[in-house]
Length: 174
Image (cartoon, rainbow, N blue to C red; front, side, top):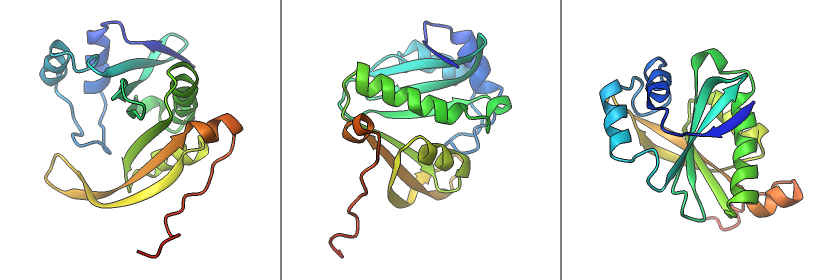
């Protein structure tokens, strides 16, 4: 697997995002016009980085790093349906930590997912992210429904020593 910075390959991005169903995202089906409009407005570059996930030169997914100028960025990983469940999510999360902690000198990375996205939750766990919070009715879906979500975090201090420190959520009972 290789990660490559997005360099205006808008047709490839449109293809990936419109040819897949994004069940665990706000909008399950993305429209070409919306993607092109967002691109024209600088969405994929303004305080963001977009990276391709490649396998033997094929674009198998994309990583959007939001708030790239902050010390604590957020991200979104989207994999082509043909490549889900094959370890690419875990590899992408490992790359994300290496890149953001070692190269970009970030102190923390946060990722959110719907509570029912078991595949992504497993990826977070396998990549050393810590489950830090359960957010009730926090994920608004495109169809008007609301779902609970989970927040996972990775911190540079843990990454440096190769182990996760436990959270202290129940240290104080309120």
